[in-house]
Image (cartoon, rainbow, N blue to C red; front, side):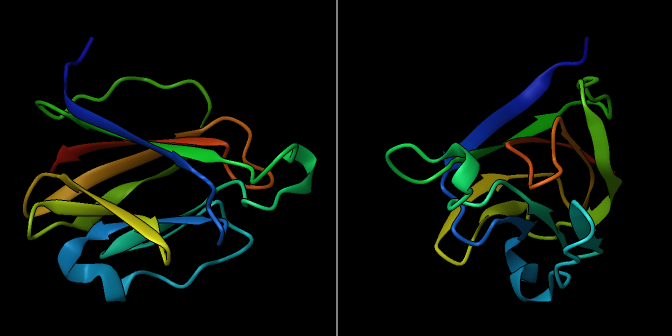
Length: 139
């Protein structure tokens, strides 16, 4: 079993129904959202469709939440996750600081430099992922 270097989970209501991941330097260069694809990506970042905060099917006393877990792995090996691989590719990470967030919130975590192989996995994602796992190694 590979060993993670670090792991961070962000669980919150996503008012825009998207989670954006990019190097701090490339935040303005992320791809446009393709509403027909669970992940939109380019060389500078990716956008994951997550459960929208106002998802009426899951509201009780507030907003629906979704989780994004970012795990950085050592030595190029990643754990196998159950679910569907939604994206597997490389993005530029020149500053070594990955931003996870949307227009209302962002968290910053360390990441490999100068580029990172990213794999996004999720279970049910028809209306946005309830939980997305983002696994990352230096490339």
